[in-house]
Image 1 (spheres, one colour):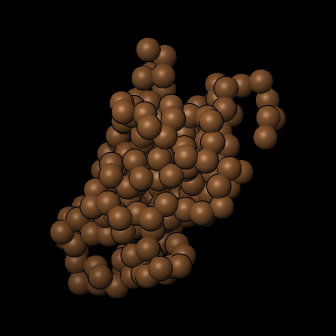
Image 2 (cartoon, rainbow, N blue to C red; image 1 turned 30 degrees about the vertical axis):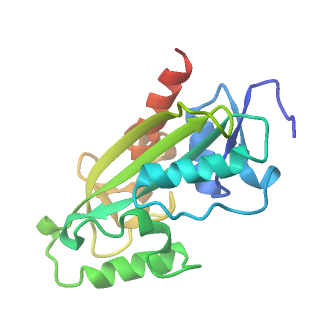
Length: 199
């Protein structure tokens, strides 16, 4: 598994988009996807982002002797009372892909005018030094925006093509990766986590 001389951290995810973003934002570490240590995924039975992040981190930590980062993130839309929330990745059902989830979101917002499509991306990150770590490091980020009527842009993943970024007058999927990482919920949370790692 050793590829570089950098300290290694397991990421409790196999999502290539997340892996790329986290590696970019934590350049002093080598980020290893959990598929290299465990083939099963944690059951996300928590009712909050932080509960699910802890479940994912502990599951991966039980199968390795390295620190583990887990992220639970999602989109909360005000007009939908915070949905899809913790169910963002499976909003259109188990096994749904990004297009399925985006299509369902647009359907749910069919009659909602743009000014009422306020939404935010939320990211909760936890880091465990080992499976029984009683003091996990926890960081969070929130990114405010609105939901578009049609997808725009080819960068990013998930709901990025529908997430309008008011400060840059484009969707998240139209931002260059380095700009997105400077603004995003995950970027905010990772910068918090990086500062905790230096203490």
